Length: 305
Image (cartoon, rainbow, N blue to C red; front, top):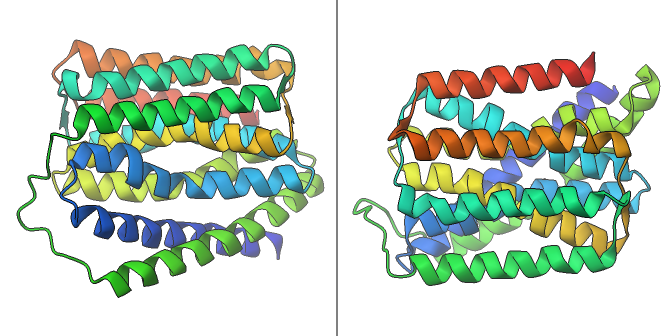
């Protein structure tokens, strides 16, 4: 029964995230915002909402291992699995000038995550630094991309009532989905003897990364590379600066020292790997996607076995 409810929870998160993104895009289109700015802020924040809700719920219910595992696993999944599948299906041409700042902030946030974990916990003061980093990232993004506008002449205007409806449906789906996901992930962890961190880094992280996967794949297939790549870059920044930052403000989060030797370096390694692929060549395609997926499979196999 726990497995069925877990699947229901994941489904609600996916549907909720999808509705929330539609609401955000409908609102953003009214202001003719740059697709990349939409991707790294509104879309990424919308698709990362499950991570925030799941991590907050886990921490408040006394399961911080789920929270840390979810953030780490989700960031690794976003680059290794989501981006890997996206560029494998359709090559993405990279504009270095547009993406460099977002990638650099993602690298800085990952290094901050590692540095703040060295003493064994993410404190409330460190949480404030993360939140300040988020505000700085949003400010820089708006400042640098505000002069760019949407080039999508076929976009349709969404009625305000529909935007509100999507927002309410999305918020409800995310809330109830996170409730089911956390409760049953913990039950499964206890019943089969697997640690909370492993459950968080695999099942929960994959579940909460599905909105990013759906959004990025659809955007890429429609030729909206700015939204696709921007969504993933922004989501990883949001996961650390907002999800980890806000969660640690509620309650300091303990960090197991073994994460310093494997999972955190793996996350940073994926960020560096992405940077090499994005800024050495002119595009990311099947070969790069296959390499990212292979690295992700190796990480998951190591975590489980």
